[in-house]
Image 1 (cartoon, rainbow, N blue to C red):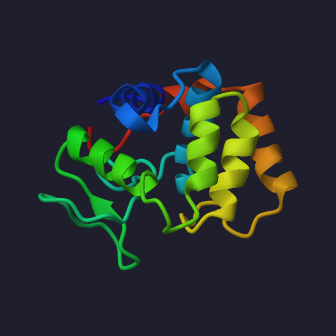
Image 2: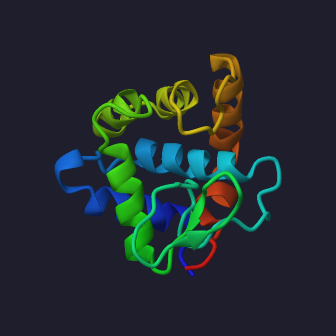
Length: 152
């Protein structure tokens, strides 16, 4: 089993042309995003190899729930689906997410970009809500960084 922090690191390493900055801030922001997918219950089991709850079909994936979130059969396929989703040029308003991942300087702005996108996590939340969520993680990051990724 891998942790959220390890998954965030693997995503940055696999990003290729997306050029996700490999920074501690990005790692914490990606871990916060993963936690937001499970909030408020950090122990809630999520989709296999898919801590950001992607909905993109790739070979070997299966349905996790009725809104389209997928289980991925391997860590590699889950990372691929996440990157392919983020690379979509016009769908989902993912450009700001990509920009903050490439910048790698502000986890709060990354979560705000996620909230403003079609991803679904934090959608409709005021910036103060995502900032407060991030502040809670900043105070005690270890549970967020070391939580396991389901299915890995």
